[in-house]
Image (cartoon, rainbow, N blue to C red; front, side):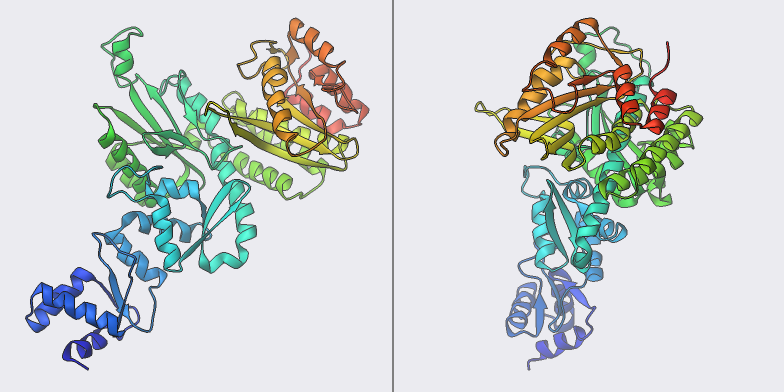
Length: 527
């Protein structure tokens, strides 16, 4: 054994000892008074003979390999230690995995590593390149389920199925408040309401894309202090500030979140063709002291969920988690689901936030209808929040979200349900067909699209039903009554539409007294 091999065997006898190529090169130069070129040859020969091991083909910053004991492999702690200095995005990803039961989604991986969606610079790593590295080192694995790709530590793979189900709920929770947060920001002039893109709870693995990076939400604002450019001129629009949001509700907001957010903000700023002001906003339920200090130093806006919706929002969050779990995992009875919705709506009313949480109230109406749908279709397959999509011949992408899709095997039909939990005095209009929340949007746009897509997979006819606590306009009622005579749209067991009054009658016939009481307390009021 040469003096070099003997020395290297000695210093690498500890399983936890490692050095990057540059560090090892400098050690050999000092020890044996040799040149850098000769040190590289010594390292290469020692690796070839198996005296030491190399991380080849995986590099850790500036094309450097890491060298370690020839009888061991790189442990999680060692990889984190190396990455903290040489590849921070990898370090942040592993940190988040360890603190989150060993599992996150690919979407969260994009955020935390600040990875571009498409490789645009030679030095920027995509998330797929980072995952390849960690898979090669045996640290992580990935698995896709119902359109969501999960990243998980190899150490938790035996429990990955239950972890995926649980984490899907966490992802939905992060999205659940976004529409109401958006409304609050618009109301308080943080952003305008002309163009806001945000992550949706029905597609929790898809965020808003801007400048090749993903965001939980983004929009624009003119609110940057006293505005010297008045009116809605083109000049004023060009001066708008880009507002980007990072929203974490299901866990504590951590330092790794701050770093991922910051790197994305920096990337957008450096890629802009002209100077663009950016206003970063972090929204959280809890935050670590370190993350709080970092955000404050950076000058980012920090919004605690309690600041927006009041401290009583926290028991509401807990109740919503319970409701989501009870439906997803078929826990509890229909009566228990209704009881939980009733208690949650009560908390919202008591907190004085029922107006600010209007979107959440609409979501809870959908939950309230779930036991009714189960009652109407006792032996059916029920999908909630389903997204159907396709690419047209001209290359345009179309996709729509559906509240509930029921495959009724007894009556051999598929029913698409549209739910709208609105105040009972609101009128749902007939037109236009190309704008959401109208009758024709459902019956002339989204329902025909679902029919085309679902009948590719199933021979059952596809029908529709629109249920709301509001009322329909007179011209909408006229059209709905006409549609109700069409056998290709009307379900076998009920009508194609229910306003507040008809819905109460349907529930009376089904003897759903508790649901009726909840609707009368929070949605349908006597005029």
